[in-house]
Structure formats: C-alpha cells, structure tokens
Length: 239
Image 1 (tube, one colour):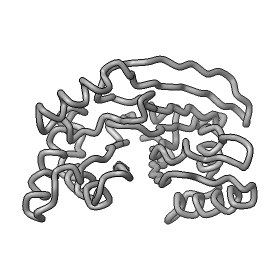
Image 2 (tube, one colour):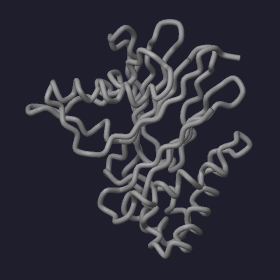
Image 3 (cartoon, helix red, strand yellow):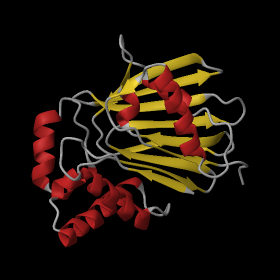
C-alpha cells in the first residue's frame, strides 16, 4: 500500500511531464528497504535518465515528491518540497495536519541534488529562508492545538502514523494552501478537513470526496490559485 504525488513548478516548462517521470521512477524504489534519502536520490537519478532519452531539459524535473507507504505496522511519509500531510485517528476521527511551506516561496526540489551547481545556486539564494512546518490537531471540527517550527533540512522524513491509531493518511500538493474568497485567504486546514471528510472507502473514494468538496468550495465562492492534487491510503483494519 502506497501513494506517490508530485507537483511541478508552474513557472518552468514541461514540469507536468517531469512530475510524471518522478512518480514513475519512484515506483522502482517504493519498497520500505529504500530509506527516504535513497528513495529520493534514486528516483531523481532514474528520472534524469528518462529526460535524456526523451531529449527534455533537466529542469522539467522541477517538481516536489511526496510519498506515503505502509511498512509493517505503520504508514511512513517522505516529502521533498512543499505540501501537506494529514492523518486521521481511528478512535475519534481527529485529524493531524502538517503543512510544509518555504518562506521564500521557492521549495527545494529533489532534482537540485543532481548537480552541485544547482545546490549552490539554491543555497546562495535561499539558505536564510527556512522551511516552516505547522502541525494542527482537530477533533470534532474543533481546533485542539497548533504548533509550528522551522528547519533548514532539505529532505524530510515526514511523520510516521501507527496503523493501530490511524486509518487514513493523505498527501496534498501546496495548492490546498492557495484558496481564497473575495475577502480573505482560506486556511489550509479548512480545505484539508473538507477533503478528508470521507463517507465511504470503496473504489475511487478519493476522487468522489474531491468532487463533493469542490462542489462545496464553488458554492462558497472559494477559489484556488494553484493546482490541487491529493492521494490517500485507507487501512480498514490494522494487521
């Protein structure tokens, strides 16, 4: 059981193709024996070889990579770039929502590690702009607590969700943080909570939830300025 999500940089040409190459490449290294650094490094290296075959520029790989995968009694997560990771507790439906956002607005894409020059350029421009992580807990639609912190770590082993406590884990592109109404920005947590309000889990349950959520967003006149992508794992009964 696993999900892989990649979100291309909208200002760089052909990153829709690059994101697909990253996801396809990551499939070869999704097994738990590959740690986060190994999975990311191997995935971008294989994606680079695909760009050579396709005669595409390297910067088409300017895309994030988020992974959630089952590993024995847990779902472990990995993130390189920005986005959101969320888990839902089995016992009471409480949500744990983690948002990863770069204060510079320029996320660290895993393909930068392919070239020392790319690493140097990124570090020179953004080394003083840390990654900000916010953790929010919701219970029965009520905010219970929220904390945030900063890090200069470029590749993140995301939270680990024990299956005995969590039944759903989802990953999102940063588009969930781009919603606004006519008068104000909509909190990321409001969007994620609606997208996580699953009713059933058969078949394409994520697509069904997204359609219903976006119908509501349209009624509320909440519009997004960036692409929204979501993938989720549901584990009904822990083994």
